[in-house]
Length: 230
Image (cartoon, rainbow, N blue to C red; front, side):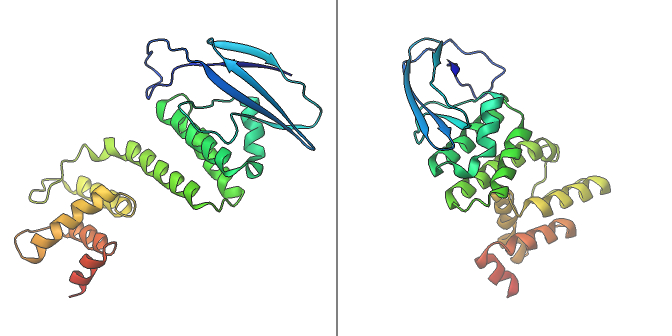
């Protein structure tokens, strides 16, 4: 089996082109079969390199730099990625976490579509992933995706604690979005909770639609909830 490995500088925005960068990178390759694992090692000194691995029938998947982390990210061809996707449950924690982290990075940079990363998350659901660190990483990434989706919408509405001049349709839209987002968005919760002290001291008036959101935010904070009950 012939493999071609190519290195490319990773950028947070894949649409931009940075200065070429070629590093000397040691790469381990595991070809995992039904009954054995064939291990290989190469030293990538140029932009690309081809090498042959003595592979047998029954290949399940291929891992580059298994159980290793570093400055690199690993982007697999579609066929190799499909193998890892299928056999995700069989991978070690390090390799499952690495695949998740790398492909979120690719989605964030635009190298991959977000749908591909979301499909990977659903695969973790299907295999009944139990590791807490992996789910923490998934939750964090979902929050970032949600922020990217919702921020352009919410940024159109300059809502503050002391002035609301929305028409009725905008008011309904913003309050509806807030009710959903306050369950996930710490910044929004903090904003709503920051109104509560002055509201209880009658120093601040909050219109009914946003007052309901503020009260809902109090349910997520024990001290604020106790004050609300009192």
